[in-house]
Length: 469
Ligand code: 5AD
Ligand code: SF4
Image 1 (cartoon, rainbow, N blue to C red):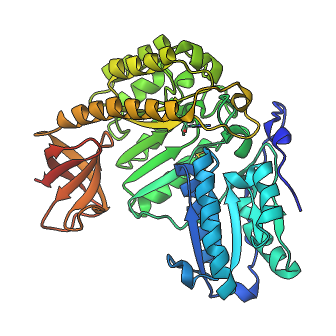
Image 2 (image 1 turned 90 degrees about the vertical axis):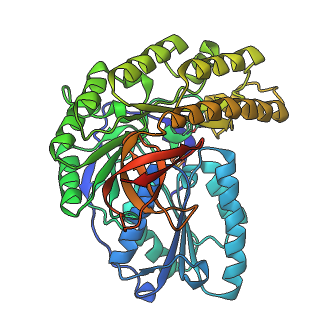
Image 3 (image 1 turned 135 degrees about the vertical axis):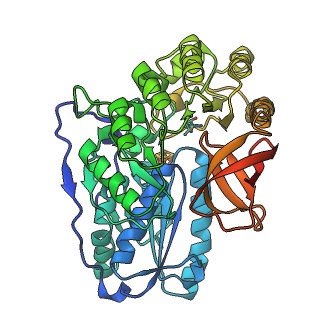
């Protein structure tokens, strides 16, 4: 048994050699061959991509994916720890599986970011004994070994490592889309924003070698993929740990030269965003004009407490530079309300900056104290009702600007990559503009997987409606 340790997870050894290795296949226990598996993923795009790898490993071992929980012999919950409510949903779902386990044989596993939390694993060991195995973000490639051990011993098996992390290449993947693919470029995070659990759950910042990334993108292009999204908790820090003179700007140029139709990248941190990167995005036609640039708060006092390393003025300057340099760019953000000690005045600063920037969209959250993070130890006397009210007020302002930004598109023609059938209306298709606006598209012919020109007919806060031309 290897248990997570939050103190160890925080340590950073600057001289440590990050291990780079290639995935080694292990045969899964014969009792699972040909059986069905169900994987449910919570959280960010990186976790979604990990979910694709979990499915890839199981499928290459002869298991069959099902989206019907009742059909599954193996269930894996790939979890997120970013806020308390993400965890509550997982624990709720566990209750459902417990009932199902009473009626049939199911092997149940938990992985992902919650598995890296000491308190969660202690709870699983004491109260959720029906969970059969747990593995963490650092040993996803060892999943089959963890499952096999659990089967052979018949005991709950917990294998979680609180280490710096490594880079494992070549893990099989069952990608969810045939047209748009996630590509990890940098794992972990060293920023240690005071509210955030990610540096603990995902380990130290470590870049993949650019050669491996380009190889992957070329392969995806050969397979017919139209779009890649380069992923990292902080993509702008790409290369810092590996190279003296190769960064995200260089990588974007090299990925652009592969000739793949569309390149995106998330998430950006204002601290590492250079002019060179802005120029590359604006110069390369296949690097999409969309930037997700979390601001978190508009109050300098709160930004400092959050450890964000920029002031509101610095953020706004960067924001304006991006807006003014990249043609047709859309910019979205993340905002937290109710950080410990946030006053009405601080909150007003956040509203002010939203009014100033007029973001194309924003993901807004109420602060959630996370285990072992510095912010979780701060005095926090603001009642939850006040925080909820602030979120409500903020959302109204944010939505007003999203709608305004979308309304500007009406009458314009936008190139959209069509990813599937619209979730809201099955007679329509859904796709994304170059600047990442969701469009429900009317078309008489099947356009899935194509980049098509669409005339925008009308706009809502979160989507556009359009007709193929
Ligand atoms: N509480 C609330 N929101 C959080 N985020 C990260 N940690 C927390 C937390 N403890 C938000 C940030 C981040 C986004 C992914 O989630 O806004 O950018
Ligand atoms: Fe959730 Fe963060 Fe982990 Fe992604 S990295 S799954 S957002 S805790």
